[in-house]
Image 1 (cartoon, one colour):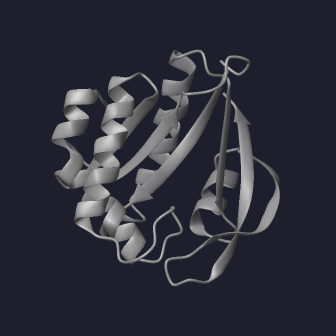
Image 2 (image 1 turned 120 degrees about the vertical axis):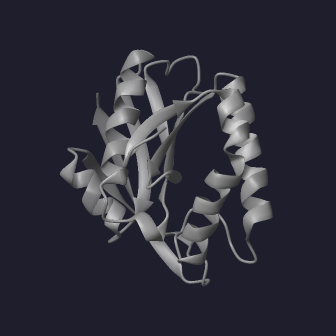
Length: 174
């Protein structure tokens, strides 16, 4: 994983080895106010536990884990959830697009999403779905990348500061 902005798919062993770096990215996003499922107090230890579970999902074939390196370290990540019901083998769930605050504006999120779409196609997944905070950077990113906005769910989740946020649901055929 050398080079600025290189995106790679991690196998189970690589995911376990990268737990600390991946957790650093997640903890930074939560500390920065991102609504990504976690509430304070939340730190490195909790983030590592989350990514150990993700690594287990990679080992089980239920999750594809991508990592983006920038300036020699993992600074971004995204997951493709493959654990869908039997009547939805063509669908995948995009989860936890995260970029460390120090590496934003380097194009990592776009690169991660392009590679995620490629990974989905390789696995026969032709429909991807996701949700994101209304009005955030990610909403603008998904729109630029050709995702279709389905609608808004008000007061869907909390920001780490305890205020409610709306979520926007997107889909894309790949």
